[in-house]
Image (tube, rainbow, N blue to C red):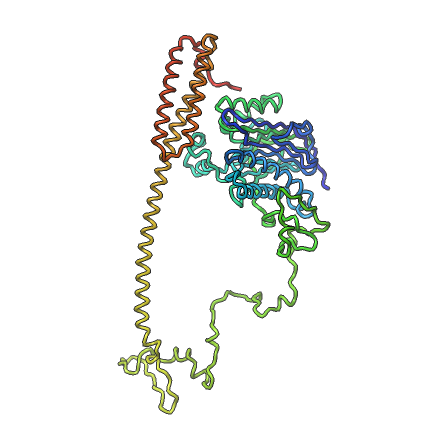
Length: 573
C-alpha cells in the first residue's frame, strides 16, 4: 500500500428549510471512506467527523437538492446521498471494482444513484417526476475531484480568494456561455430555475468530473442554489474568512439567505484541508482539469463479474445474479476476479476457420453479385450463349433501323446457326418504353407529394413556433408581474422592521399578517398557467391595490419612524 500523506480535515455542514417551504428537500453527505463513518442531513451531528485525519481511501462531501413535489424531492435527495455512500464503500472493497481508478468509482456510484432514482420514479406513482441535483467533492491523497449533476455549486477558497470550481448545468448558464445574457441578468431571468440534468430524470446521466491538486489550507464550500441564489461568492469568502469557526460561518450564511427572502431550502458544507505534506498555494489561477469518462469504465455496476467469467462478455450470466437493487442485499465479492479491462478470450481454431471469415480482407467490398450471374445454361457454351455476353455484343437498335454511314456494322447470324433472340425482340425490351413512362410518372407524383408534405410540415412548424413564442411572452409577462409584487412586499417588510414603538406594534403585526397573506396569493398566481393570463392579471391587480393601501398607511406614519432606521440597508455580515 502506498504511503498516505498526512491530511487533516476540519468541517461542518448545515441545512435549513428556509422561510417559505414547508419541507426540506435538500440533503448532504459527509463520508470518511477509510473508516466508513458518515453523516447525512437526517442524522445527528457526529463529533468524530467534524475533525479527523484522512485515511488511505480518502473522503467524500456532497450536496443534493431534491425536486418533484410532495415528498418526492425529499426522497430523491435522500436516495442520492445514501446510494452514493453505499456504492463508494462497496466498490472500493470489491476485488474487481477496487482496481478501477478513484474518479471512475465516483462516476459509477453517481450513475448508480441515477438508476435507482429513475427506477423508483417509474415504478412508484407517488414519486413520479422525482429528481435531484448532486454536487460532490471527493479527495484521495492530495487530489481533489469535483463531480457535477445539476446546479448546486462548489467553491474553493485559496489564500483568501474564492473560485467557483463547478459549472451549473442549467439553461441560463448555457445562455451565459453563448453570450446571450450576463451573470447579473441570469439572476433575475425567467428561466433561472431550469436545469438541464438531474439524477433520476433520465435513464442515462452525464457526470462531469474535474480535478486539481490540493494545497495547504484549501477551504471548500458546497451549497444548494438556496444559498448561491441569495449570496454571491465574494460574500461567501468574506464570511468564511472572518468566521471564528465553520459552524458559525454556516449559520451566518443561512441567516443572511433567509433575510433576503429564503424562498428555497438552504444547505451548505464547509471543509478545510491542512497537513505538512501539502504544498503552499501559489498565485496562479485555479483551473481544474476536466476528466472525460474512461473507455474502460463499465456502463453499469455488475456484482456478478468474477473468476470464471470474462467481464466483457457476460451473456452467460443469470440476470438474477447480475441485477443489483438498493432493497436487496449485495452479493459478496468473488474469491477470484480478473480486472474488467482484461482481454477477451481468444477464439478457438474451429471458430476462426469459418468459410465466410473476412478477417484477411484488405480492402472494402466494391461489388455484390447474385447467384444467377454464375449459373451456366445446359448445352450452350458460356462464351456464346451467356445473356450477359448478349447484352454487351448486340446492337441496341433493331435490324430495320436505318444506320448512318458512321454507324458500326453488325453481321446477322447465319441461318445455319441457332437463332438467338434479338434484343429488340425481347419482351422486356418491347415493354421498356412503357415502363419508363410509368416510372417517370411515379417519380413526378412522388415529387409533388413530397413538396405538399414539406409545405404542410413547414406551415405546422411555423405555427408551433408562433405558439411557443406567445407562450414565452406570456410567461415573461407573468414572471415580471409577480416578481415586481414580491419586491414590493419585501420593501414594505423592511420598512415595517424599523417600526419599534410599542403603540404601533399591533398595527405592524396586522400589516405583516396582511403581507404574508398577499404572498400566499402570489404563490397561487405563480402556479397558474400562462394561458390564464387574464385571471393572473386580475389577481395581480388586486394584490397590487392591497399593497398600495398598506404602503399608503405606512407612509402616513413616516413622521413616527426615525429617518436613519427607515432608510437602513440590509443586514451586512
